[in-house]
Amino acid sequence: MTSTYEDLLLFILILSVLILEIKWLYPKWIVKVVRSPDGQIRQYTI
Image: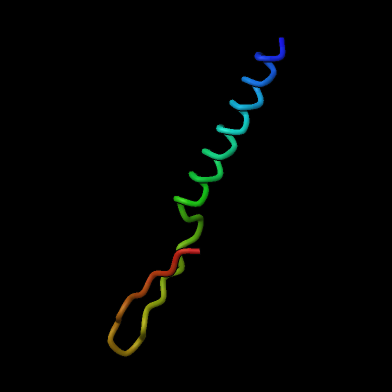
């Protein structure tokens, strides 16, 4: 029974690390700034 409990904890740990890594890989917001005189566009990910 102990090994099943340890396996479950290990699985939850690995799953939480993967979810956190995926969250950091994909940005939630992209701010696009357009400069008025020449129309140059810059994008910033937040």
